[in-house]
Each structure stands twice: as structure tokens, then as C-alpha cells.
Length: 244
Image 1 (cartoon, one colour):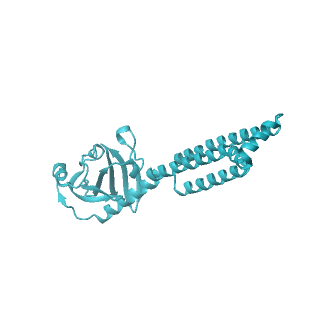
Image 2: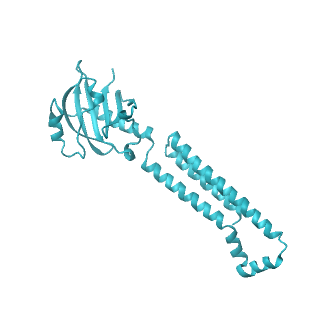
Image 3: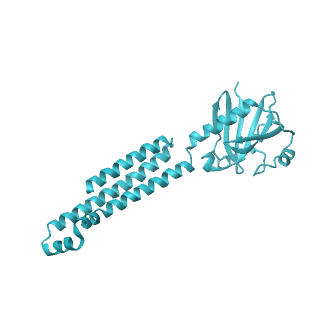
């Protein structure tokens, strides 16, 4: 295969990889990182091709025909051709490896915007269904004792404490397939509010605002329900209330 053919194949591979990545719904930051990865490797590929062409041209115009004949006799035309393209194949393999690593990282770290909408949608559905409470309580301690199937301890939210809600009780639920706690509250005017707590895993839930770092909660309106998402005390929390 010629250098030109290898270069064309490398470009086609990158274009196909980029098309696949775009279908994965990357956010702008992830897509820019991927394009930078391909761009840098393409520049390295082009430099390698120029160096190889220069080396071939120098050998062709060498004033030492005995050396050229010796190389041809020792290695043969096919082996000389493979040696000349060794750098091209190495760079192509490196590009494929880097793209594979990036694609896997995309799968493990999903696009934050899309995953946040999925979380909000599931939280809204749980709020709308408003299944019966499994334990009625106006304090957190009995709920903490009840939620024995959780791999974390339910906590009071400093953000929610500012609202001065009245706790009613709680029940088990789930967020993206992970067992979570739903804690139910009532406002002063009788409106019901649900709080969801689950162990925060950035690989599963993506990048969620952390209020302890001064970040504001993410607000999403879905299915007539206002949902706020944030991370507090190592837990992913979601507050849901029906829109007026």
C-alpha cells in the first residue's frame, strides 16, 4: 500500500470515528476534546509521511548505487516497501487505539445534559405516581433505621432545610436502576414535595452541580413537574414539586 493510500485510509477511519462519536450525543467539551485528539494525530501522520517521502527521494538520487543494490538484494522489493510504510501503520494503529479509549470513556462518562434529563424524567414520574409511603415519620432518624437496603445513609439536606418543609415519611424508589430513598414533605400551603437521595456515582449520573462548591442546583421542568438536581454530602439529591 502506498503512503497516499495509507493516508487516505487513515483520514476515512477518522471521519467514520468522528461520525460515530457525534451520534453518542457528546457535550461540546467532550466533542472538542475528541476533535483535538484526531487533529493532533493527523498532524503527526502528515509529518511522518513527509519524512518518509524525503527519505525515499534521497535514496533514489543517491550517488551510491552499490548501497541501493545491496539493500534490494538483501531485503527484496516487498520487504523494502513494508519497511518504508512501517511508520504509517504504527501511527494508524495508534490512532485506532486512542479513538477506542475515547469511545470507551464516553460510554463510562455519559453526556451530562442527556443523563440529567433522564434522571429528572424518572424523578418526575415517581413524584406524579406518589405511591403510598412505607413509613410515616416527621423526623429523619426512624427513616434512617428503616432504609436498611440502601448502601448509604440518608441525610438531611442543608439546601432543603432552608425551605422549612414538614417531613411526612418515606419509601424506597430507584434512580436509573439504583435503589434510592424518597422522602416526602409538605409545604405551609399544603403542597407536596418529594426529595430523592442516592449515592452519587459520576460514571452513572454524569456531572451534577455540587452545592458545597458553590454551584447552583440544575433546574429542569418535565411532565408538569419542577425538578432540581444537585450533589450534597456525597449523595445525588433531587427535589420535585408540581408546577402551578
